[in-house]
Amino acid sequence: MSLVKQFAEEINAKIEWVRGPQSEIVELLHYNNLHMAIGGYTSPSPFEKKVSFSRPYLIKKIMVGAGDNQAVPEKIKGEKVVVADHLVALYVRKKGGIPVFTDSLSKGNYLLAASEDDLIKMDVKPTDILLHKEEFVIAVPKGENAFLIKLEHFIDRHGRAKE
Image (cartoon, rainbow, N blue to C red; front, side, top):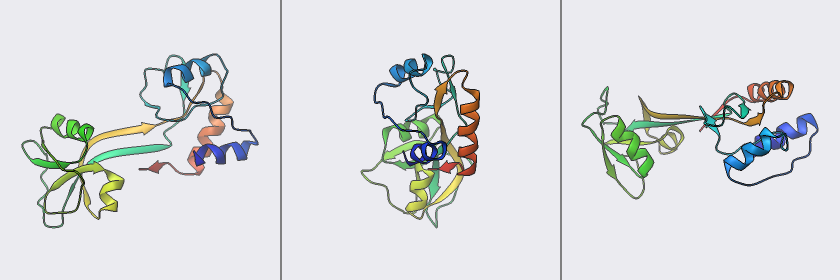
């Protein structure tokens, strides 16, 4: 939200927050009743025919991490991987790993999967094993090219955040 506030200040615009399901917000954008929408839009998107999207402002990576003394395999096929989230467990399974559930993740001598940011916060070294990547984007009406360019320059100047 602070990204939107900073951008609005830069272009001297007033923010009016509108909440609703993504599909309804996309319709409002499509008919030029809103200038932009943020909040869970990722690329690629099923809404690309109705609206345009900015470059990613946030990249979220779900990675496998390893404890200090844990051997790091090239692949996780057949390996046990500690998870605390059902969606992360799905990503582990898709790569052939065996998810082992826990209530809360902590550093140990085992493989675990979480967002790259969470691994770093736990002082767990992320490996090169990427399970999933989401690129969060801002939606704008089609045809608003000058506005989109301004928004993308703003995103570029403020750096693309990684979760």
